[in-house]
Length: 333
Image 1: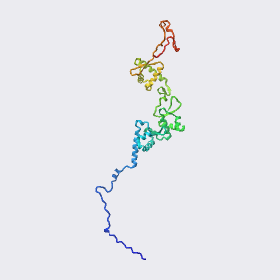
Image 2: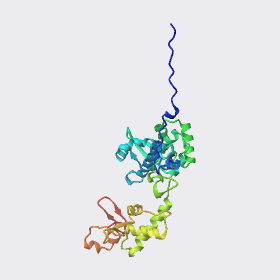
Image 3: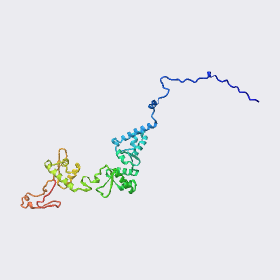
Image 4: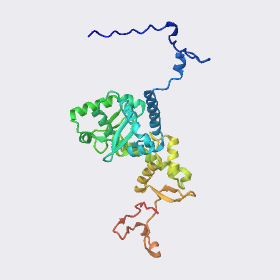
């Protein structure tokens, strides 16, 4: 059966073809957007906003350590209370400061973290130190001005002595720690932070020089105190503050003594029956005078006093003490 013939559609009239719709142009609005305009009104990216938030938290976190209550550090609990919901965002701040050696973390109790801020100068000294060296530094730091023995450092850090000696040398070179000795154990070495002054319990205070008791220095000071007691105020009494002021004025001591240290000197003279208390002044301060030479009380009758040999007799006391004739007797009134 022959195929059906397909009728061809007549060609469309070009004049009747539908023309494309004309673009509407609003007056006053440019067709192409201005690149500079887009650049000025560009919305900050999410990464930039996060970076700005971290920088703001970092400043707030560092400023927190300038407060009086947190100058020595802040616990994790107090940190949560300070920052509230923003506490979780502190993680990158803490990590950044730790990498910069500006933040030191330690354990307060069993589980409580404690954060301490380090100055920029100290942080620069920490650059390049490994974890064991930082651990040794923290152990020494906790000891304060009493220092800590090398044996105790080894027990707390569990670091072998050979490796520990290298760490000590590295920290000493950076002027982070220093070795000191104690008057009680001169053969042993202990360590403390470089910027701390040893406690009096270690050095012995002003009465020691190079860990030795300075007898000559103390003897000179005792002589000067006796001079003050006899000469100041006409010998009628002098206070500890007046003695201390005179010492500063005369520059008799290589270091300035406190009133408490002057009191220790005066007390040694009291024990030697060279100085005694003599009432108080109008401000309630104790007055010290030179001890007086007095004869002891003895019982005798008037006719015994008239006896020709009275002055040549010995005096016997109840406790068995016997004073020979004309023997001087120092007695505090």
